[in-house]
Image 1 (cartoon, helix red, strand yellow):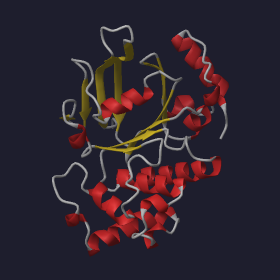
Image 2 (cartoon, helix red, strand yellow; image 1 turned 90 degrees about the horizontal axis):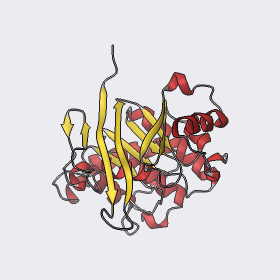
Image 3 (cartoon, one colour; image 1 turned 135 degrees about the horizontal axis):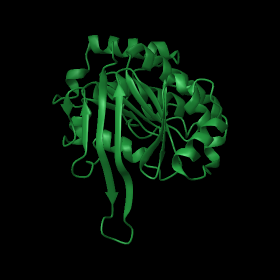
Length: 271
């Protein structure tokens, strides 16, 4: 039985400042097929196109003409970013992005559960929904289910990123995008957030793309690993191919595929 395709990227290109001295080809004909329940880690040096790829999938901007983003059987390429939210959840590097500091945890989750749906905020805040929010927060073991009325701005960065994770997944989108979501946290908090991520991804069986700068994390998490260079995917390893690989093996695979040296020091650091 073949795995079911969940996301297809076809001929995805993105050029910034076209026709100027600052022209940059951020993505160069990316082709990618992601199966349902894949948990893909994406690594590459600065400027490789990792975040741009997530931005195209998330509808922040469209790909160049001819590119397609298909989720399930739905072509979402030309939908607005707001409508992409019905298919895609996202957690950003900065815990302050994606959560509203002056709103309570409950209000943030109420806003998230209606993302991509044309309904008012009040409709999401009722007794049944409150119980749903408690059930979503309780497995995190951070006590947040007892603090629904706490302002998100009063939480620690780790707690806030945990809320962002629940917000990104509570409406059960087809796809979860993680954009270096542990990079701005201290090592201990980052570890907690990554473990919470793995728990939620497994529990919800959600197809996930996680961008990271860190090779050790890229090897530790997920079932598939992609390396990008100059807007292209140059290495794509499945679970079997990446099992037992070391960071040095990964560097060697990258340099062989790209013809370039891997010189991103931050990616080589353990966390």
